[in-house]
Length: 143
Image (cartoon, rainbow, N blue to C red):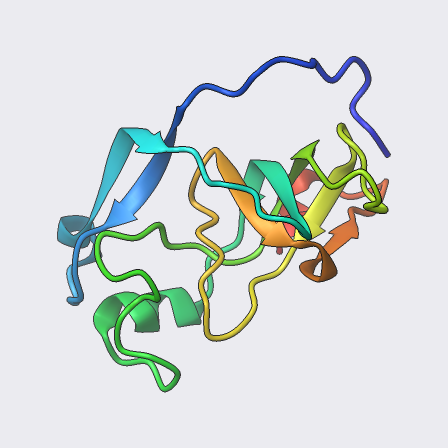
């Protein structure tokens, strides 16, 4: 499924997202909203998705708390954008990609790297992206 009339305009240089500032148990004191975080850079073999929904899981809380078996720090250090599986609209893809601009998709994160889904946009390896079910809402697709 594609979004009809997906606009062909340049993305702004910044986006809104949730940032985690450190490890701890009081999540409210660890996270904050950023209104001007740099847009992700899409690399070859990745799909740039405008996020419509993001699923949070116990693993996200373990990473924030610092009690995670896979890694103790997010891959890029702090601050970082938490969040795992997402659903949304393809904004940009390689010319040879099976996805095209406007496709409604869902993506999962690749352990041990968080997907950074609590943001307006995320760039994801194409092998982690699938078309969303036509009869599912964005929230259901992200779950």
